[in-house]
Length: 332
Image (tube, rainbow, N blue to C red; front, side, top):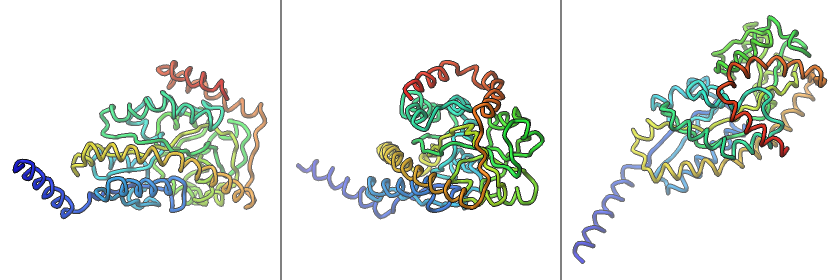
């Protein structure tokens, strides 16, 4: 009985010491503004973690690029352990985990449903595991939606020939850079999404590429008034966690599992928010008088044909994954 009492006393003291020390406070970097689908999901994630850990862990979301101007900077901060979490595109993560390029090749998916069947299936879940086992110090928690990406320019374009000589801002990813070069344009990297508008207005670049909500909410449609519906890629977002930060803050294995579960629970929430904003943003942009360029099947085929060298250069090592993605696509 005495031994049991001592054990309970020790546990009680330890619990009170932990409470007295206060919660573990971590930061999450987000480049998008408040109200954006990923930012809403970030905040829901932070709420769930605090609730499920009974206040042991508090995550503060810093939106609008306050902590990191670019997603690449956010990833570097995660690697160094200077940041707890970051919501980023899969594109810059592929610079650390090249296998991710296999799921973001151009014209890879038939639809959003096709992509989600892949990401929620064996291929997508294996990719998250590869992030953690890559030695990068990054931990992939879950996927978020980011729709389709299209080029938007200061001039009309209906074929790759129309892109020749243009300077286009691209994500910090070598494969994406090569994709645009194959279309005859010059890729420009290192420009954060919050800097695209001013870069177009100052003539540093002639355009960029992204989804409807980003084109709308960043105000880029006011600078580059031609939105080309080529739908070249579907690049998912990833919520990342820093391995070094978790170790430094002594986050327990049990709480890390709670964090992972909370992240996965926010995925459907983000997808729903995304669908709603995508429709709203498209309506906003069209109403503003932007020229939305609808490509004919023959014109779209020109863009697709230009990507064949990219599949040879970047897809050669992933033929089995690409074939598996195509097989999933037969259902759609």
